[in-house]
Image (cartoon, rainbow, N blue to C red):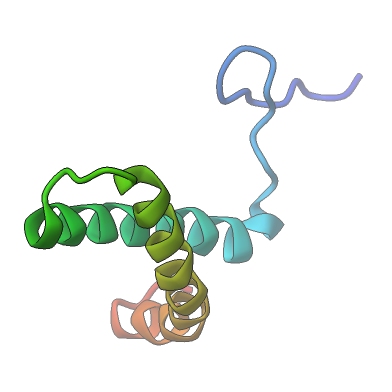
Length: 84
């Protein structure tokens, strides 16, 4: 009998550890670039017509840079804090 897999929410299984090197930076870069671009746009432009469309466009541009940067820097940070 196989052991029961851990679930995230409901019947969605957790990903195996082998995916952590890609999935964790992907989620982290999405969240951080989205939040930072949202805050910067609100501070600089305020809530304007077409804000969501403009924010999404800027978020995608930010994420195109953020994801590869996180992939490059994460191994260095792991060595700095002694995480294998």
